Image (cartoon, rainbow, N blue to C red; front, side, top):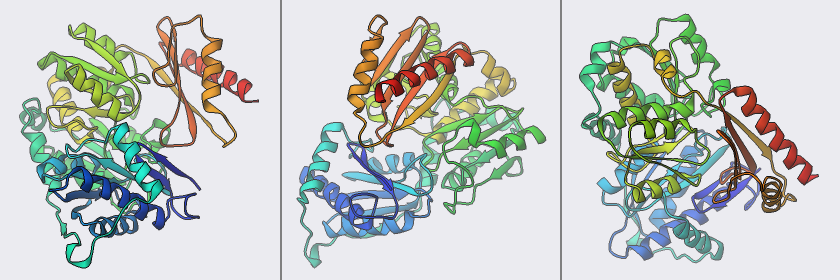
Length: 463
């Protein structure tokens, strides 16, 4: 069992003892702290938006969160089954002081989490998160008397509002998409993408009979590991190999990560979701781009070719957004399939990613596999090492930094070591008890070799 408290929220496994996993008591305590923090920051406005993915514990956790927020005096607008980007859009539209998304994103079925939004519908800052954690630790919150309990409203209109906002974007070309008569397979891992994506595709002009739904019943009983990596997408890959499809679309449980499958069943590459969408955006809107230190160098190459500047941020959506604002980026995101398109909102959004990508593919006029081949071909090896409580991660990272001191090393977020055009980035995860080791090279074999070399070095330090 695990419970991870961080500046971005609280995440843990369901079941177990208080403080060791995500129990009802932990949910109430953290919800009360965040609700109290919001009220103190916004003494005259008391509305908050809540939404959740479809995972099995979602209904239970949602009831606890909603009741607690009402108990501290906040009026709750409950979107019910929703997506992370849909909640992010709803917060400012409702004039709310903040929002909570109940999702553990790509984590397996036993996990859930509370992800916290500010009044702009963006993830709260590190400084704000530290304040919320301090309130929770001190149990510095009060509950209101009965006449001041918050009101509760259910609103199921936001999927359509989200889709309407996407359709209104100048770069989303519904006519081009409709004309291509795309045939598409969709795997939404039995979560809320199974509701939102078919609605979006039909709104974009894809015929209902041309949409093959795989694992799109939002029961929360995940049909496979929910992280949209090629090794977890066997079913949809086989479907594309067997059928006459133009592409496959895969999302994680809260629909903020987008992976694509080529017409022959091969992975487009989650790193290249952002690269391809950025290429399309830059063709029509010249401006800078941002991704994190663990993302492919292909985005840099595409950006420089377009005559713009590329910037790398620390890992984490809030860090990417902060740099995007500072550098006036027109597109950004993360190499895990996270698209952030500021023309809509500052949050990873698979739905706007789908609309922009289909517009790009329709105008490109050739197959998705040919589109993939026009981009610089890098390979990223993604690995991890499980942590035990006795491991001093900071010491491990410092030892690795010292070992490779003769190479260019970036330590703004973990340790990133440059080897000419190749690199290795290792950092402690904010959401899981692991060290992530990402490496990139022009060949998969070299990327794997670099990763295994660093893993060997880490194990040597640990032991």
